[in-house]
Length: 488
Image (cartoon, rainbow, N blue to C red; front, side, top):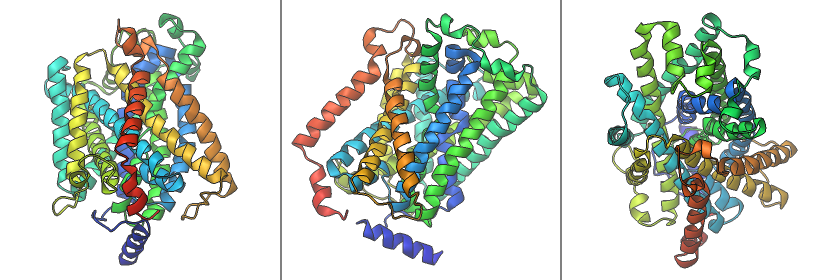
C-alpha cells in the first residue's frame, strides 16, 4: 500500500501537483462511485416512461444501442485516465492533449453540464422521498424544498470526508443491486406476462406522439443517452484512489458495463411484467415501474421498494456532488475560475474540497427553480444529457486529434495500440451524432404547450454559454496561469 501511495504521489508530482486530497479509495470504492453516479435505478426510472411513450416496447433497442456506443467512449476515457490520473478529468486531459484554452472551455462546459445533471437528479429524487414519507408525490414549491434539502444532506455527508462518502456509495451500490438486478431477475423469472416478441412492437406510440417511426426512435435514442453518463466520475476521484493509474481505468469500464447490463435487464423485465402495456405507451400511467413491481411482489413491498429507490438517489447525489466538486477543484487549482483560491481550498481532517462542492451545489439548487413547472422533466433531462455529451465530444475529439497528429502516444498502464485509434474514431462518430440528436428541438420532450424558445432551450442555452465563455476567455484570459505555472 505504501509503495502504491509513493508511486501515486510521484506521478502526481510529474503532472505538476502536490498531494492535497486524502488518498483512501480502493478499486471497489472507486468502482462504486462510478456505479452510483451512472446509477441504473436512477437512470432507468427517469426515462422508462418517456421511452415507452415515444416508441413503445421497442424503445429498449435504442437503450441497447446507446449502451454499446457509450462503452466505446468509456474505453477512450479509461486510456486517458490511465495516463493522467489527476482530479479534474476531462479538463486535465484536454489541457495536456491540446492546451489550456481548449481545456478551460471544456472544463467550464463540464462543470455546467454536471451541475445541470445534479439539478436533474435532485429534482427526480423528490417524488420518491415524498412517496416514502408521506404517501403522496410533491409538486411545485414542496418538490423544490425536498430537492434542495437533499442537496444540503449530500453536502453534509461529503463534507465529513471520503470515508463517509465511501460508506454512502457502497450502500448505494447495494441498493442498486437490489433495485435493478434482483428486482429484474425476479420479475423476469416469475412475473413475466408477455412474450419476448413484444419488444419488437411500438403499440402505435410514434403516431400517438405525432412522430414517424424513425423520428420516434431518434428521439428515444436521445432520451436513452441519460442512462449511461457519469462513468467519468471514477476519474475525478483519481487523486483519492490507491493505484489510480490501474484502478481508475478498470472502474470506468467496469462501471459502464455493469450498469449497462443492469439497466437493460430491469428495463426488459419491467416491460415484460407490465400487464397493460397499451396504457403505459399512451401515457395513461405516469410511473409504470412502481405499480409493476408492487403489483408483482405484493403490497408489503411498497415501502421497502421506495426506501431502496431513495437510497440509490441519495448515493447518486453524493457521488455526483463529490466528483463535481473535484472537477471544480481541479480548475480552481490552476487559477481557472473566479474565486479560485477559495474553491481550491481543502477543508478539515477529511481533506475534501468543501468550498467547491458548496458553490456548485448552490448553483444546482438555483437550477431547481425550473422544476417549479411539474411538466419540465423532459427539458431537464435533455439539459443534463446534452451538456455531458458535449463534454464527451470535446474530450474524444481532443484525443483523436492528438493521436492522429502524434501529440499523444498513450503511455499509461492501459494501452490499446492501433485498436485505440479505431475505438476513438468510432466513439467520435457516435458522439457527434448523438450530441446533435440530443440538442435537436422536439416538442414531445418539452413541457405541454411550451413556447418555441423553450423547445429550443438546449440549443440557445449552450450557445449562450459558449459565447460567454469565449468572451471571458478573451478578456480575462484565465488560461495564462496554467500556461506558465504548471507542468504539462
